[in-house]
Length: 235
Image (cartoon, rainbow, N blue to C red; front, side):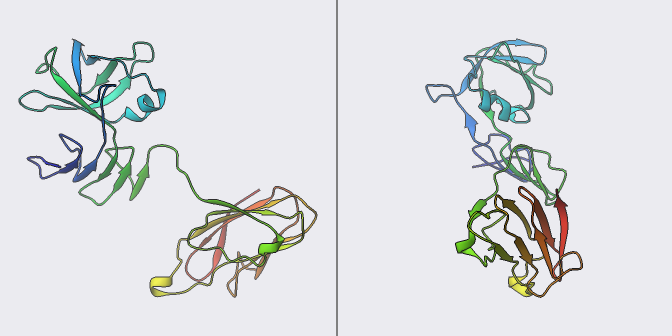
């Protein structure tokens, strides 16, 4: 753990870029830090290549900390697509010299002083800012699961209609610690001529007590405002 002169706290980060910064360091195949092999303008040539393409993609926006006396920190802005040992950084790197250790870290997770949280970015611009792909839960159900009540662990529900009709009973609009304000579900009909019914469980869905999907591959995305459900996406 590192605490710098600005009071920023870093986990596995030599120079944290925000109030709280977790950013795993990338090391070479021998699990030791990279060193600087050459310098040219804002381009730093590392002692060995960054071969893994996924690693390279995720490093843009990350941090390069030169292991000199001042531990100068630089944002990584570009990875050379052909010379895979080269990185381009921001800031004055005249204090760096060939042979210095250089600590390369992912952007990781950052909490800024205004309460914004960034994943894959050190400069989040919203309450939650994800710079990259996200994985959300997806589940397939059938007639034997009907009626199905989506839970806190659900997001996308694919309804296989081949064995009969299915009813989705959306969870009730509770209050307090059980409130579901903001909850989002995507519900999709897959196959079969049977009807998929989405029931608001006493609360309206865009002004109606139920919504029905009768065509294959149709879907609805609904979101709760705490007292009703709103359709925010469909095809």
